Length: 118
Image (cartoon, rainbow, N blue to C red):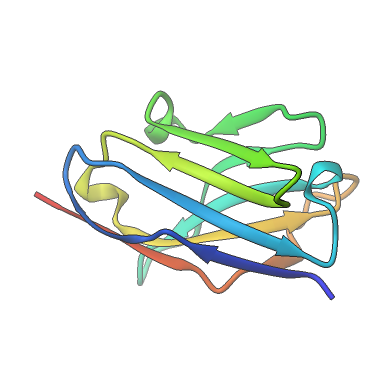
């Protein structure tokens, strides 16, 4: 049974940092494609960062240079290091997994809230 559990969210001031974690179980993250997404109430979900089975990463433009996606294969955990946080980064953050041969993310965590204040 695939499970994804996010943690590490919280409230920080602008310019601060947070590291989100996504503990995975039921499969091996090193052979999967995974991503971090975020959503603000009333807005569409946004893909923030992705990492594929080879370790190649991608980021949405608004977080490039500030966020880093990584994984610890031994711990079977995905991370999102967020620095220089801005109020517009405030959102619920979700990790998700897809089978790399497909484009749809089928497995999602329940999310962790990030709030950035001025």
